[in-house]
Length: 366
Ligand SMILES: Nc1ncnc2c1ncn2[C@@H]1O[C@H](COP(=O)(O)OP(=O)(O)OP(=O)(O)O)[C@@H](O)[C@H]1O
Ligand SMILES: [Mg+2]
Image 1 (cartoon, protein in one colour):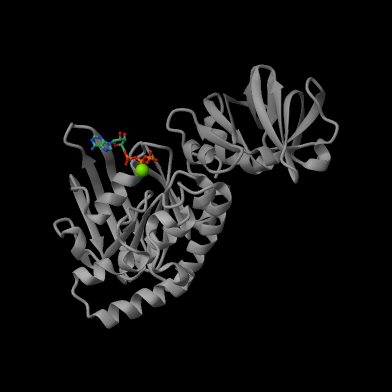
Image 2 (spheres, helix red, strand yellow; image 1 turned 90 degrees about the vertical axis):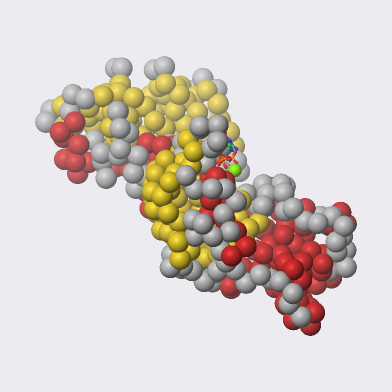
């Protein structure tokens, strides 16, 4: 077990492209840390630098108390599971799982014990004599994880290990991996572009964008207190509605104004952003904070429905407000009978809104 620390880590690829910009990140001993972000944000590059598969162009990486910048991958105490599993096709599951131990010249009986114990944890004891091509995607994935477990690493590194699986199996394996972490209590760093995986699996999540870490926090803190517009828009599904406009003073209260529409903010929020009156800002509100229920601090606005998507338990109602498209997430009972072109009063729950600086995109309303 070990903590992992990245200090001002940079990556410049040989073609001159700078993929990672001064990343600071501390992963605690035994923590399940998820690196999440859109394609190309440098999740894999960061993970591969931790693994030692990619040189570090600047900064330092520590695993445990050891700086590992110049330590080869095999001596870093890590085990990595890749998206494509990279199993040896000509070997049985047993041989695949035991291979790294055989290389280390462990006695046969010890290898046997370790492989069988691990197979039991993963529920693949019956598959040990099969070859990878005789396995389903989920089974292959478990073998790849098993191959990592037998090495007793201080840190597990996962790069999108579930992305080749169908939706149902992903959900199943997600739960299995979370349970595995609870059981092994080993530090795990898990890369995904899927925010649902990030939210459900991570003790903490590092949200990345363009080679930088935008925010590191627990899933619920990221959701409720996004530090900036990028995190606000990335975490949550459907995405937060983000609208540009300006802050104005209206009858001694602060309001957000866009076109002819004004949304008065609760005083508690207004107080925090009063220095920004007269400036351009982004207004953010999550779809679940728009509905048909009037409460204190709610502003009703008339919108015209463009699409209703029924999910069963809930519905996503897309409507236009002036020339803006907004999405509301409603209880499915509340969306019954709604249809295209209907005009409705949508209630914006302003106590739940966020205001972001227009230029640096930081959340001003926290
Ligand atoms: N060998 C390379 N040479 C130059 N640029 C590279 C190289 N490998 C990756 N990159 C670039 O570095 C950036 C980060 O790539 P990386 O693979 O780390 O992204 P990612 O977040 O893992 O994306 P994905 O979700 O698609 O896997 C991308 O812009 C990519 O094009
Ligand atoms: Mg990647």
